[in-house]
Length: 226
Ligand code: DX5
Ligand code: ZN
Image (tube, rainbow, N blue to C red):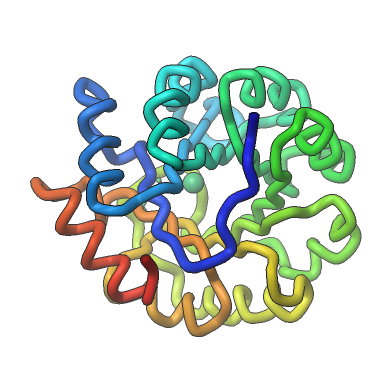
């Protein structure tokens, strides 16, 4: 059973930057530090050049994350996302974000996510205007604003991205989660929070060092998140 993502401010550690040989232990470390939203980056080698992970990893984490009261937040950086929605929903995703740029059928893809019982997220590349949310607002449960170009962890936050977050907040109103994704750390999270972001994906700033729990708390404090 999927659940609605929280609407208060939360850091969502991205396992893309974790040590996959110790994935369960890494997730446990950040959940013990307070994380409840776990971000899963799926890349297909087409929409973005790298290939990362798929629904088997969502399935592998589902009990650990859900038993601890958490959510699995899946970010599909893949072409034809509508074809994969059912597999990720069955694997245990709570929210599935699909890219506006990845399909000519974005309204259909978002509806397919909802039909599969998950929250539907609209992900937007840096070059895509915030206005793209307007035609599909009736099927959007959350927005994901890329603050780097998708495909790789460890990139620098694109300056000015917070203005797009602010526009998304105007268009969506209060109560809809807005995710920022890419280059989020203790230096960039605060401005995004002020602009109206509520979910802060953090990969290398959390898992890049040797103490993910301490790093998580640092980013959470900067964002004003729990
Ligand atoms: C990038 C992914 C991000 C990535 C962020 O394409 O969507 O979620 O894990 O990594 P950092 O936090 O290192 O920029
Ligand atoms: Zn992501």
